[in-house]
Length: 619
Image (cartoon, rainbow, N blue to C red; front, side, top):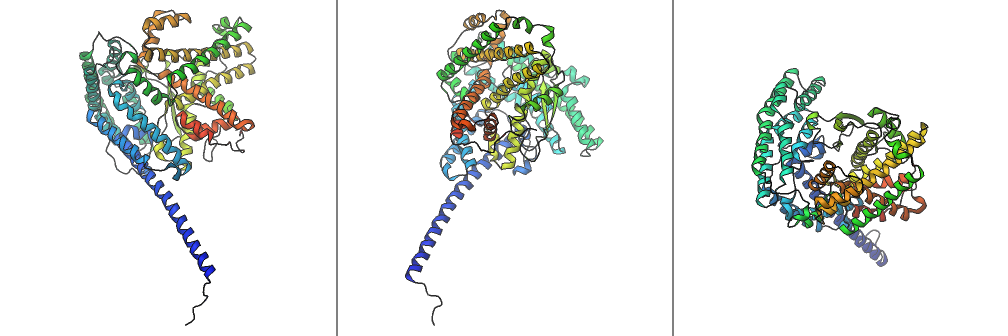
């Protein structure tokens, strides 16, 4: 039988060539897919493990766990243990090994960048294993003894499961604080216990944050906020009145029988540990303090610059700000006196809501609109910090919204310092628009809409976040100047510029002092001499500045070095993009990258050409 359509030799060779090419392409694509599947598996497992190991962290990271593949979990408030720390280090090593086995060039562009960030972050975190007892979870200014009550008070109740999770976490606070006391005891054995002056502050907080008097009177904020949240669930029909009352009774019982005794036991344990012979000094006085400080700089700021480079960067900025102040004062000798006048103190807006609206209006055109098909800004509530926490809280803070629930946001203002006028305006810029709130909502909505790898939510970069907030805070001084000019107050507009440069100079000085104290071992007397040269002569002020920097290494640098790194990145963008540069394009690039270390951001910038369509869109 004759074969139909016989192939010629030439046709046969072409067919074979096609088959080999097809097989090669298939193998090529398979290898790429295999790398992507492995990366997805590694990161998904890492995300799930991290989320299910701390219900508190999970709740503040994602609102609906099931949407992220987490269908079952046990409410956990993780406690410290030496064994757990060692296991964590081993797990990190395993993840690093798995990531290094992958070829990032075979991943998608977004996953390749995530791979880069994750590997750098984990490599640095491994170093923490050499400095276990150098960290301080009970720091007087930012320790868990003052942070945990705020996290509990703002724990959102969206479902009944949230209520039961919350109560389960509350029921574990005794074990949690007991484990922190064990950690402090181990620190003492290692010769790294916090100084007596710092320990006394922590003990005082334990004695005053939760008191039996407030609980018996039913006036404690952990009682009132709980009632508000369960009442809201009743109004939504999620809980009945009887269920709400039962949960309130359970909350009161746990506050009185678990949380209060936990604070009392921690205070008593710290009292026993107190050693008045331990002075308040920087990390440089510790055996491996300088090495830990170098690790902490990277961990807190996301900057990989050497300490010498950082000092040069700070010194140059200090000179620049000092000269700017001298120039303004020389041209306007009456400004310094004007700063303390009643007329200057009067700001065009008095209410936080008015200020936030003005900030949103002025930022439009220089910042991209929020992702998704909406130009509406998410709701924000400005709350006062509870009076029992005023002594221990920052002047203001924004509670980061979960990845999948950015519609409702809260900014806390510490009214102990009675911020108002320009101070409140710039604070709201830092915490709200275009600061933390805007940055968080933009990042979260962008990640969801673009399907970014959820493991990015585990990566924290203080310099990226706080540097951005300080960057836009300084922009808000310019907004305030423009506002005053519009109201015919040119002299006051100049005063605002003077305040901007003075704040920058002050933060720069404190950042330099951070390095002096923790890297160079500067004593209190040496720090006092520096401060006295800049007109800070009151002993109580000098003591407060020294104590804060000594107790919170790298905190000022997290803000100010982060800010300087953003300015450096901006200069790089101007040089690389030329005529295509605009603030709008730079801000879009920075926000689209999402939280990152600054080395990775610079690498990303060098790989980026600004989209010609990136033109400001006025709202």
